[in-house]
Length: 137
View (tube, rainbow, N blue to C red):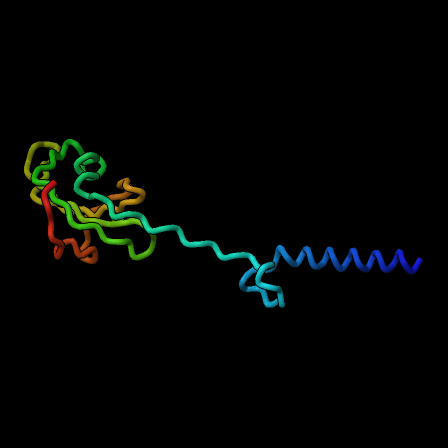
C-alpha cells in the first residue's frame, strides 16, 4: 500500500511539473530553468524598399480611377510606416473629371505591403506630401 501511494505522489508531481512547462514563458514568476521557458517570437524581417515608380506605373488603376485620365504622374520616395512593417509614399497627378473638365493636381497617400499597393487615400497635411521630392514615373 505504501508503494502505491508513493507511486501516485510521484506521478502527480511529474504531471504538475509537466503541466507547468506549458505555462512557462518569459513573463512567468515561477522559477523555471531557461531551457524550459518558451522562446519569444522573432520579429518578422523588414520588407525590402519597394520600387514605388514601378508599382504605380504597373498598377495606376489602384491609385487613380481610369476615367480621371491621370497625366504627369509623379511619386515620392517610400517611408516606413510608423506603426507596422509596410511602406507609405505620395503620388500626385493632373486629373480630369468624368465630364472632361480638368480637376488640377491631386495628391494621394498610398500604403504598400509586400510590394503591393494595399490602400490609397487623398493626402492630408499630416502626411507631409507637400514637402516631398517627386520623380515622374
